[in-house]
Image (tube, rainbow, N blue to C red):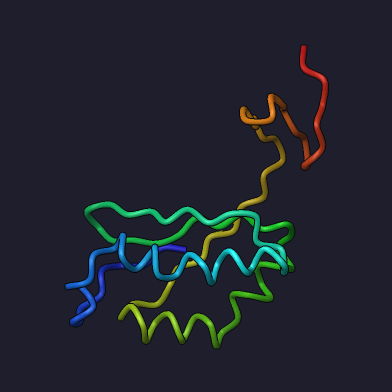
Length: 106
């Protein structure tokens, strides 16, 4: 999800503060399929990179009502881009995964 910079008083709040305040909410979403969320930003704006157990879990969270809530909160409508990871190099586990399943390398 990507957001353009808000044009409101919220710009005075540092993005790191917003992230720290909202992190507990996103930790709780693990129970409905959120694997991780990275808070990202650059000179053009801020957003999040979400990894879900399934697209269905992501779509259950990112409802039209949720998008409207974020539009009101940040002053910009989120842009959702969907990707499916068919191959993942997962260095922390020392694995390569195809469609989520570890495979032998070589």
